[in-house]
Length: 117
Image (cartoon, rainbow, N blue to C red; front, top):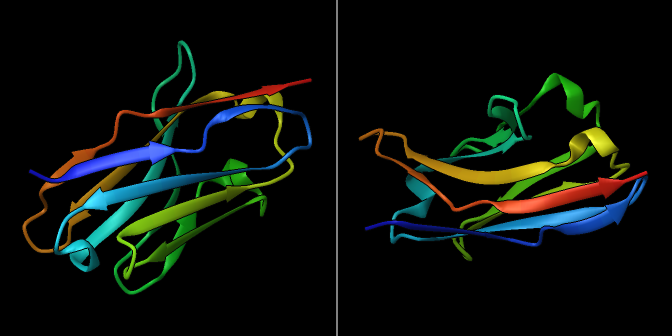
């Protein structure tokens, strides 16, 4: 069973920065695409950032250059570096991995990010 664990959430003021970590217990992490999603109360889950096995990245339109997603295959992990945070970034952030061949999908339990004005 593949395990996905997020960490690094917390409370920051508007304009602050935060880095989230996703650690995956899999011997085939290099075969997985990684996506960061978020869900605010009363809202649907939305894509924040995605990084593929080849290192290519995509971001949600609301990111506007403020966030950076990365991966380190030697550490079986992905980082989401967030800067210039806004109150509307407040949400539970989830890490998702999907095997590029089998399409098996696994979700983490989420980590809370709260941005105050």
